[in-house]
Image (cartoon, rainbow, N blue to C red; front, side):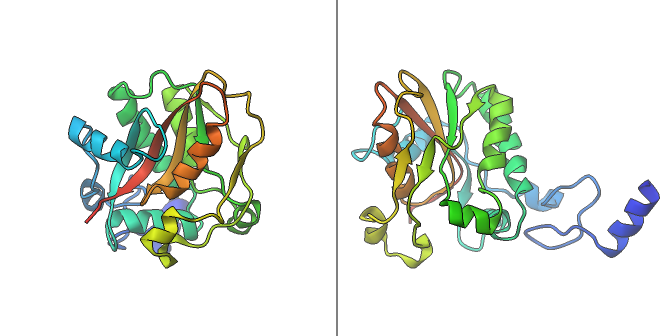
Amino acid sequence: MQFLKDIFYLFYPNLCVNCEIALLPNEQFLCTVCKNDLPIIDDNKHINVTLTSTFYGRVPVQNVRSFLYYQKRGVTQKLIHQLKYKNQAEIGGFIGNWFGAQLKEAKVFTNVDYIIPVPLHPKKEKKRGYNQVTLFGETMSKILKVEYKPNILIRTSKATTQTLKQRFERFSDSKTKFKLVDTTIFENKHVLLIDDVITTGATLEACANELLKTKNITISIATMAYTQKD
């Protein structure tokens, strides 16, 4: 069986998402060089304040963490593009495993009760075949020992692709709507809302505002990546 795998690998090698060289059998999605070049966000007071400040004056969040810096044409963008548009859902688990271990070691989110994904519109999820944050959330759930709770927060309208919007339009977007199907499940609970990338924070803000219809809820946020401000 291993012989057949080696033959298949010879003719159909897996390629690094970033540099597109053939991956070694022990490498996954990224070659060792590109993996070492990932722009991992340091867990320090300054950057944590910067992340949280994205939501100051907009929606109350207790804590915000993100794993990678996101830049145009950078390795993070290529990784997430493959995750979202090239049927590479397993990348979510790859990132979730690494980020979850980092959070566990740092003892972050130790008092969280549930992990909640930012939902896709059902039509969009059906077309893509998956929500790009599902495996990310499920993997983090196992590592942090926190229950993953999808399908309680749902998306009731489609969103226009954010890259086609101006910054002001992102903040004033009234077309993207979310609904909490049960406002009692998260009463007196601390929930961790997860998504792929923080850009302006508008989508996460809309989700958080809907979650705040629950009594005495505490909200924190974790994402795969964060777009640095110029």
